[in-house]
Structures are given as C-alpha cells and as structure tokens.
Image: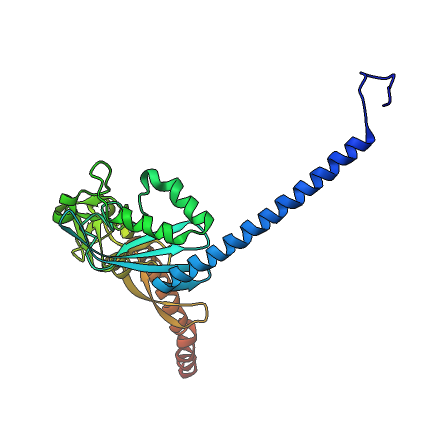
Length: 304
C-alpha cells in the first residue's frame, strides 16, 4: 500500500487491479462470443425470411431490391375496393400500394380508403412498429402488418369514406391536384387531362379550353392562335395581327426585290418615301433636255 502526499489519500494494490483487468477481459470475450452468436442467428433468420418472402412474392427490382405481391378482390364492409398491388423496398423503408383494377380518378385519386394518390399507406399508430420490422429484416411480419391494415377500415380517419368510394367524389385537377365535381372541370384534349376552371381558360378563337399557362391574356386567345394569327412587322419587329399587315415589295441591300410585311404605321412611312424614290428614279431614267435639243438647234443654225 502506498501513500501519496499530494491530493487526497487513497489506497492502490497492483495485484488486485491486475486481477480485475483480467476479469474484465474475460467478460468482454464472453460478450463478443454471445454477440457473434446473435449475429449468426440474425443473419440465418434474415436469409430464411428473405427466402420465404421471395418464394411468396415477385422480385421486381434488384437495385434497389423490391418485392411485390397482390391482394385480389379486396372488400371492406361489402364494398369492393379492387385488386391491390403492393411494392416493398427491402433496402429502405418505402411501401407503395396501387389499385390496378378500379378507376380512381373520380375517387379523388385515392387508391384505397387509407392509401393516398401517391400510393402511400396511412400507418396510423403502427408506423414505429412497421419501421422496426423493416430495420430488423422481419419482412414477413411487415408484409402481414400491411395486409392487415389494407383489410381494415377505420371510419375515423380515412382519406375517403366507403360511401364516397362507392359513389365517387369527383376528379383531381391535373394542374393543382384539388378534387372537383364534374361540372367544375373541363377536359383539355391537347393534354388528355381534366383541369379545374381556375387552372384553365377558354379560347374563343379556336373554341377550346386550354391550360391557363397556354393562354395569352394580352392577345385574349391561346398561344396556338397567337402563333397562327399574328406575325412580326419586318420594319419595327412589333407583333400584329396578320390581317393588319401590308405586303409590299422593297429592295434589300443587295439591290434585289423582297416582299415584306409592314404594320399600318410603318406602311405609312413606306408610302411617304415612295414618291421621292420614284421621282429620283424617273429623273435618272429620263434623258437630259439640253442634250436632246442640242442636235436640232445645231441643224437649225446650219440651215440659216
């Protein structure tokens, strides 16, 4: 036992400390062996789980690894929901559920009373449990949980009630995604989709509805009609209705004659310049008076 003069007094025994360290090493080695055994069993369980899952499901993707299965002819309280297709991402927690037999557009785009339009299942209070199953690799338990949730209807928190599922609630607008009744939607052929009245406009020229982004407020018509019914003035480069443009012939810098389109104002300016140019051309083309009269005057003087 050693006593130190500095600091508080304590006792130190080298032999007992060494014995304690050896004991800790033995315990650590025992814990390592237990952990290796647990890991070996976990890997075996994971492999067995994956094998069973893949035997019962279809592997649809290898990167990332995804398994897919179906729930055909699903009913909830005697209401037909349809055939559901479930895709489980085995690498990260992601589950998608889509209805492959029933029309969902007039049901607000929802795939199931508890599945939104993007195929995301409402987990409710089972969210943590589902994530734990996925993290531990217990995909069979996760699959069973998903199937049980899809077979269950919770009237307190559905995206869409069973009555609305049976009778419909309208369709979503292609642009904003909001659900509207049929009389609040218009079908736009060029997009092959329905738009609400706020996201569309009516072109009186072609008599068609177009997305609002394709409507030119300044010209009060759709961009397609603007493109086909207007053109640029070749002088000022401003855009005008084609019916308001004047077609005239003008010489270019190479002296060749081109046909150009002029707006009303530029056409007026063009006409003002025309008489001056014609006079200059006529003056250049007409013979000199003095040169024409000179020979006759010379003849007259000789005769005298």
